[in-house]
Image (cartoon, rainbow, N blue to C red; front, side, top):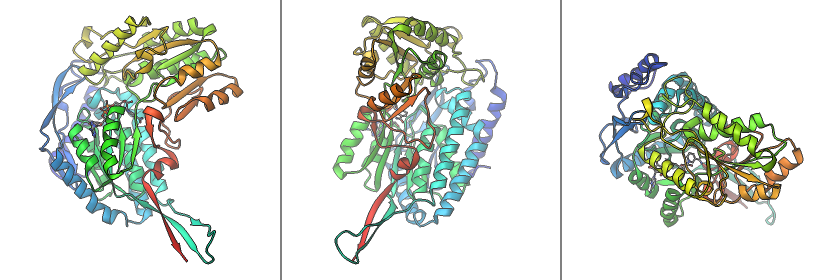
Length: 514
Ligand code: NAD
């Protein structure tokens, strides 16, 4: 069972399990009872903090627009306490044997897996992610945690060659930074935690995580399970809050590195602050990824992966989604027809229903932003193929937006240049390979690049030319932990995943003896 510092937490965990049993397959009106939301508290050291100096945020159920939970918002005071707690915990955690760090992280992975249903439910409450997608995210998060558990006892320095001084002996130490400030956004709270916390802890750091106030439910259970796994209090702290809490974490002198997931404007602000102390950062930002479909591609695979991942799962609210489909002229008409048919078949609705593929978008502001961009795309001459509107009927009170497809999008227009972060796909024709690559590279972003072709030479040639952090050939979005993930340009810097993701949390010291 979950480690519970106080009696409230029993109610939290049991409440989640209860609704999961009651609600699956229930009609919309019964499946979104506001009273079923677990209470929200910060986690600082061994304490749960239910009132905080940043005031409160009224969380709104994205399925019906009604307030459903009161969120205590961390202010500077709580951030300061959390960093202090993480700093004190670091002095011991860095000396914990690596085999023990591995053991407790493996235990955490087992516990996350055992609470898969809870996390799927909490994700749906947080931001309307369908539980079907939530379960997939739990599986990924378990893999990330196990993988980095396995690294805990394999982090080592090197003996370096002595070039000039006879008898010199030099070696490197791979050491933790100390307290990591982890700032995450709202679109995938559990996977964001799993991408940052296990590698940071494996390397001997402690963390203060600032989740978004829009998604307050998931992080508390993760932190409770970390303690139940045997990770000491203070090693993982949670200070849910808004921009002020994030800014306080960034400027705190005891925070030695920032790992950030969010948008480029916030990243710029964070980097300005970090410039004062030359504080290092990892930046996982947005994307406007091109998906080049050549005429020899497997169109079943290309159209279904390209459509479902850009306007279906997570309702387009993912950084690496292939939101610009760049299609060879000879197959253009056929691709547009196929994409329209797939988009129209996506089931949008109650995230708690097991067959829902797309839930609501996160809030009213998101609906307004998406609606505005759809209107601008029409004024810019793009051809609306399907969708383009907020959904009505029994979904009218929620933040539901129809899967939307535009064809004939001008590669320089707003829709092809700016991240929508909603279920809107642009289709753009091309005449030759060079033009396809130019269109794909023609934005300030550089997160993911997708290529569909059966011509091996062309696939690798184009992969080399795409200015992105990763390229997927004949494949869909891939958050597999063994692959370093992270963009270039306005998509950010640094990696999560693989050995590279681990070494973001390690600094190398050289020791020389002559
Ligand atoms: P955002 O930048 O507004 O917010 C992200 C986080 O930063 C939130 O927790 C927010 O409270 C915090 N924050 C805001 N102002 C801050 C400040 N001045 N100092 C410190 N922290 C501050 O981003 P968003 O709109 O919530 O998220 C959407 C963006 O995230 C999209 O661009 C999306 O592509 C990106 N994203 C990237 C990845 C990735 O791995 N590359 C993954 C998911 C989302």
